[in-house]
Length: 178
Image (tube, rainbow, N blue to C red; front, side, top):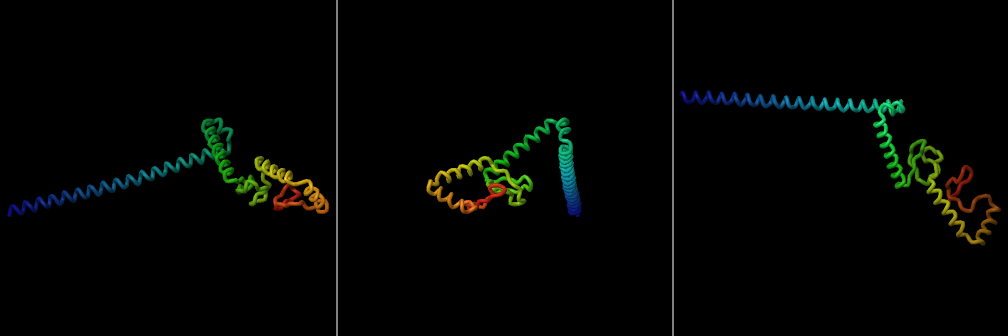
């Protein structure tokens, strides 16, 4: 029976070794998982700190912009340059979209709008749009024959309403309809 006892002893030893290796692997996995969780927490704290630094810098810049320019002129210059680039790109998008922004409420309006559809504020007329409208009016005026002009002046003298009305406010007192 010595052989079976030896075999049994070796199997027990192998079992203990396997159990010990399994326990060691499980402990290493747990340690790795714990380290990963802690590193993730550290990374999140670092991101939070960076966000707070950003908020602090923004608050200081807005409260005391001249001091910020003195304290960190390179950073302020980069901020102003990036802000100008953003504004330029936004203006290009509006031009492509044929839109303009109300300076009071920030709502987008058609480029040809005279008043904001959101708050009613009078909107600045784009010089290019103004020239285009003037050209159209000149073309309409030049298309009229002298006879039709005389006829229209006779009818306009008997009526105070304009011959054609577009529904757009021309100035503070008169309107045009289509």
